[in-house]
Length: 309
Ligand code: GLN
Image (tube, rainbow, N blue to C red; front, side):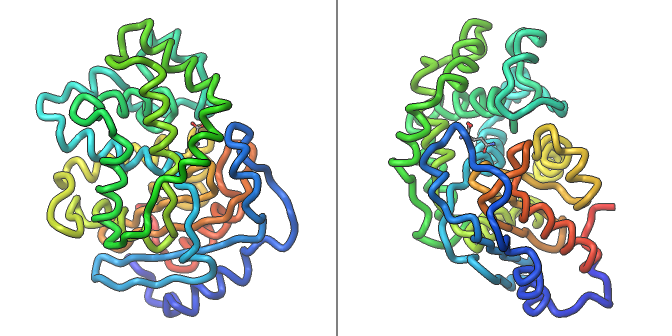
C-alpha cells in the first residue's frame, strides 16, 4: 500500500540518510560485546529490496556490520522449515516478554519454556533445535544467508564471537537454566558458542534486505520457497509482537511494521507484499535497539505510507 504522493524511493532514502545520520555521539554500545564499541557512532545505512526485484540503498548500505539478534529471524525460519511434527513450539512460546532480551526472570516462572524465539532464551532453544540436524548450526545459517542475499559477502567475525564469548556469563546462565528444566539437548557451552557465532555474522544493509525478502514475498526466497505462506505470516507476527524485546509496543506504535533488531545496530523490517528494509546505525537506546535506525524507520513509514495497518 504505497501512498501515491510518496516521492521516488532513491531520493527519499538519500533524504532519510541526510536527516538521520547521527551528528554527535549519543546512545550506547552493547555491554556484552566489547568488540562492537569500536564501530564509529556516525555510521548510517539503509537498503530497500522490493518484491518486484528492485533495490534501493543509501548511506553506509554496503558496510558490513554485526547482525546480532537479526539472526534470530533466520534461525527461526530454518527451524520451522525442518520442523515437520512441530516440536519446536512445545519448547518455546509466542508471547511478547516485556522484559529485556537477556532476562532470566520469566524462565523460572515459566518452567524453562522461553516466552518467544526472539529473546535470548528462546533463540538458544532454536539453536539447540537446529543443532540436532547440524552440529555447526552457525555455518549452516551463514550458507543460508549467503544464498538468499545472492552475495559471497557474509562471514562470521570470529574476533567478535570470541569477544562476546569471553563475557557470556548471562547467556551461559540462561543455557544452563534451560538445561536444568530439560529444554536443551546439547551441552550449554556448545549451544552458546554456536549462538554467539551466529550473532557474529557480518552483513551489509543491502545483503540483509535481500536475505529477508522472502518474508515480504509469502515465503518465496531467491531460489524457491524458504517457508510456506502461513509460516511467513506467523514469523512476521512474532516480529511485530516480539522483535524489539520490551520496546515492541513502542516500535509498533512508531513504525507500524514487523521488525527485528540486533545490538549491532541493525533493524530488519518487512512490508508484506512490498519490500524488506534494513537500516543500520550502531548506537543503541536503553532497550538495545538502534536509536537513529528506529527514528529513520518511523520517518520512512510515515512518508511512504508503508504499514501493516
Ligand atoms: N549476541 C547478543 C547477546 O546475546 C545478541 C543480543 C541482541 O542483539 N539483542 O547478548
